[in-house]
Length: 119
Image 1: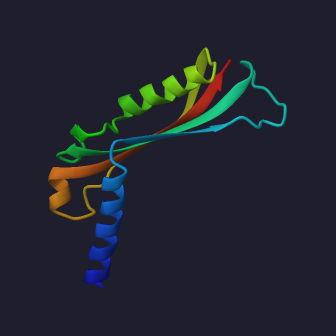
Image 2: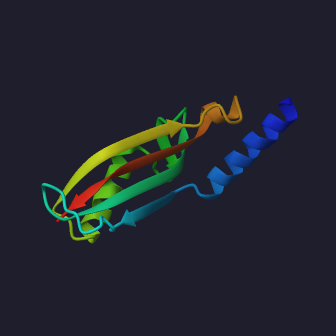
């Protein structure tokens, strides 16, 4: 059982390392011709993956801090013609437990910000 857990942890860590420094943004425009009280909206979800030092304290490869992810989210909102945003969900997770104790020092971190870009 321990070998399987180690193999799965290694696989997840390998996948995270491959995508380190990546930022991905997904956009949804189909609101079935409905608007919001603030105007026409586009839903945007931005995710970042990075390697940080010491359980997520300092970025070393990419930047998955919440601040950086909000900046990427608002840049995507501007690119979609928005003048306002409404963030409805955000999360940040340090994956320090994947290959303990190595990942205590070099920690994969993921973050996500989702919300509406309003025109």
